[in-house]
Length: 393
Ligand SMILES: Cc1cc2nc3c(=O)[nH]c(=O)nc-3n(C[C@H](O)[C@H](O)[C@H](O)COP(=O)(O)OP(=O)(O)OC[C@H]3O[C@@H](n4cnc5c(N)ncnc54)[C@H](O)[C@@H]3O)c2cc1C
Image 1 (tube, helix red, strand yellow):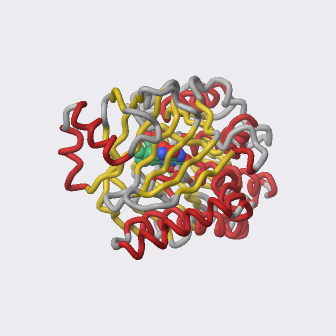
Image 2 (image 1 turned 90 degrees about the horizontal axis):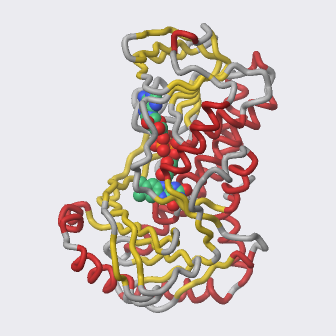
Image 3 (image 1 turned 60 degrees about the vertical axis):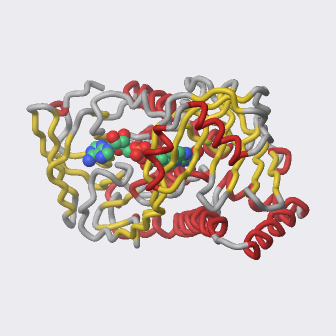
């Protein structure tokens, strides 16, 4: 549909603020029900330069296949095995796709490629998808939400039965009835591509140390690295020469993937845990990173957000049109998502804190836990299942 907001109808059944991966996936999954859906994205162009690599679980891949956006994504690299270890401590655990009898535990894709495939599908669908849009008023009322949209010099006032906030948690920070919790990890993630002298074997490595965890994800011929460091050290880490960076990486990661031989451009993201007391308010629901922001090392943020979007689409499908945005409908959504959101957030945060505990006793306990996990198939299967499909769905 044309990008100009002047052509928008006066009333929408569902207004989605934020056309990132989660908001876009929701809009696509609402098709075929005769609903009038609008997606309003602040960016004027695609985030093709975003350096993030996303590890998508097999469950997310299946969802994207169902939305017909999986095949257009270039360079998706399979993860067949996840190897978890700790620095300066014994014990490791290996999770394999054979555990769950799935073709892969997941795939690694570029954030920009995923966003590009979803945005192209949105633009081709009968959805009012508008980019370069700023909101200067969001007013949830008893019967509808009023939104004032700006696109260049054009302003438009619309109403919607249901407002979905999928803005990544950065845009609409002051929403009535939404209470936020924020905990700074005091860490940054440095992301970049690295190569070793050996071909990657479709193994994703998670390595924990008291400085913070690191993940090495197979991407193309090499790896995408997520290296967490204390915030006060991030500038120094970005400023290291390539040789010094690779030497430090080798020392911290060890030789399990071979010798690191090259590194691409580096970028840094600040890390925090953000949660909501409740993801719903008057005629409003928050999903994806707008609802929770997790530490990226366990690769759960988008996967959890996509499950939010699919659960909301299901609740919308089960609701009559005049029920959209009602307290009953929103409560049904919140109830359905509570277990997965709470347990995935607690799991990721727990991992970070567990592996940050100093001392040899803690290291021994962690090592024993990893060794035990490696030896007990039922425990491995349960953990793998949670990482791949989430909890309670
Ligand atoms: C370094 C790093 C590595 C990660 N690795 C993984 C991983 O391996 N696996 C995984 O599952 N997750 C990972 N994540 C998390 C993942 O990136 C997020 O969970 C995911 O991007 C959330 O998608 P979203 O659509 O909710 O939010 P976003 O991706 O933030 O998109 C939000 C969209 O809303 C738009 N917007 C913002 N404000 C407004 C406004 N006021 N009006 C209109 N539009 C607005 C933005 O322009 C953007 O397009 C990682 C994160 C980081 C930082």
